[in-house]
Image (cartoon, rainbow, N blue to C red; front, side, top):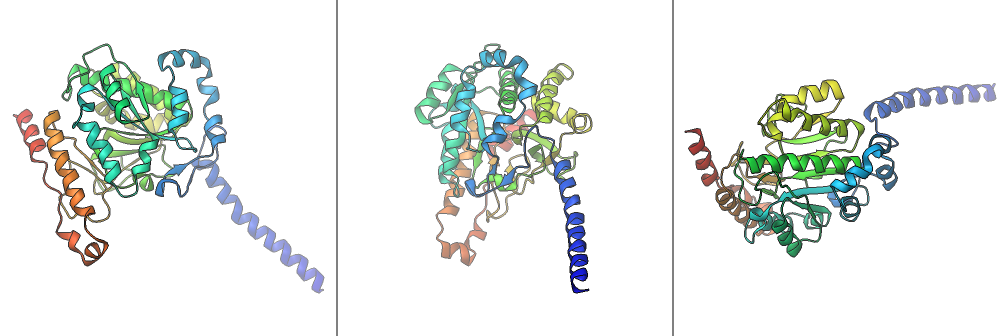
Length: 367
C-alpha cells in the first residue's frame, strides 16, 4: 500500500510539473519567432546590456539575405568585418552618424564622446560604438578620435555642412543611415542607433524591453509605452535582428515615395500601424522622464533616473552645441557631488537649465 501511494504521488507530481511547464513553453515560443534563435537574455555586461550568444548572431536571418549578400557587400565594403570588431560578443552595436560639421573639434562629436566618459559607468560602451560618416572629411576627423569609423558616402547632395532640419542634405543623411541599419540587421546584429546630438548619462540598455522588436524614444510620451499614440523619435531607437525587423526597414524605406518629401521620422509615424498590423513588429516607446529631450523638456531635479538628453526641437548647429554644453556642465555639477552630498539630498537643488537657444530657434520657424 505504501509503495502504491508513493507511485501515485510521483505520478501526480509529474503531471503537476508537466502542466506547469507547458504554458511556460508556449509563452516562450509565442514571444520569439527568430530564425535559429533562443530568447535573448539580460546579463551583467555593460551593467544591463542585452546579450545573445555568438551562435544566435551567426544563425540569424541567413535564408533572408543570402540571395543578395554579394551586392550588399559591394554597397557597404568592409562593414561586416568592422561590425565583428565593434559589436559585443553577443552581437549588439551602438551606431551614430556624423558629417564634417558635426565632427569638427568642439562640435557634436566631441560632446557626444565626452558624455560617455563622464557618464555613470558607460565609458566602456564607446568601445562598441560605430561612428558612420557621410563624407570623407568627417571620416578623417572620426579616425583621429575614435577607433571604429565607417564611411557611408552620400553623393546625392552636399552633406558636409550643418544641414539644418529638412534641407536636402539633411534628408539624404537620414535616409542613407536607414540603408546601413538594414544591412546591420541582415548581418545578424542588433543595434541601438543614437543621434550624435544626444548626451549619454547612464546606461540605457536596462530600459530596453526584452520582448519588443523595436524600442524607440519619443518626442511626446502619452504614459503607455505600448501605445501607438506616442510620437516616435527616430534619433534614438533599439532594433533586434529578426526577419520582421529586416522587412520593417525595407517597408520603411519604400514608404519614402508614398509620403514625399518627408524625413524618416515622419514616415515611420505614418506607417507604424502598418508595421505592427501587417508585419507583426512589436514596438515599445521610452518615457521622456528617462530619455529626455528638448521637445518635452523636464526641468526637474536631476536625480538618479535620467539616461539621455536629446537636443531635438532645435534649429541650427550653433544652438545645439550651446545648449548641449549647458547639459554637460549641469551633469558635471551633479557628478561632482560626493556620495555624502547626494545622500543628504543636495542633488535635489540641481536642475537642468532650460535650452533657451534651441527654444528660441523653434520660435523663429513658427513665425
